[in-house]
Length: 108
Length: 113
Image (cartoon, rainbow over all chains, first blue to last red):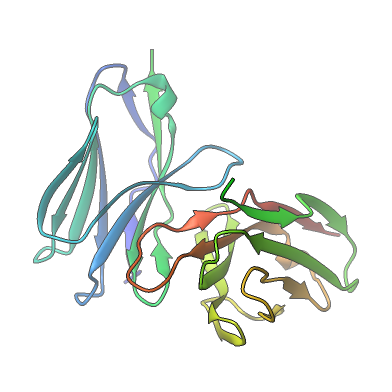
């Protein structure tokens, strides 16, 4: 089992909809979880981090963590075409272990 | 401006010709790391350094060397590049243990023919 798994997509949603991105991880001892956004040819940029079970909201973004199910998700409300990018889930051990990313396409 | 810089941004080279990709950060961060990113494989860590003179292997260290003689610099060395090292490389830094945000450099696109 891969350490961090994401559906590669593409995930296509219309403008204004909620985009739901999912990630599972294998190391039950993982403590910190991150979502990065990466535009094509650019470097990843941190959107959110979460380390407690439950929800964490920041503007249009909500990260959800369920450690019992080893599952972390990112919800993007009121999706905009500018949200079209690849979203990387990462889990912190000594370093960050990244998933392969989910490509999101928001159509106007 | 706080940043991580990499040079060169683009490089085309030939098999076996030694090269160095430089990485520098101006934030006095302790932790620095190198990743490569390949289609379908995602970001994979090559080497990391937790402080000056302290380096360790990541997931894909074969064919690479690093050094950390100064806190701000963390060069990536390919002694004898091969075509399978054609990739997009990112350097990153973190202030220290327990700090969450990782700052990425702009990336270096390397092609080895």
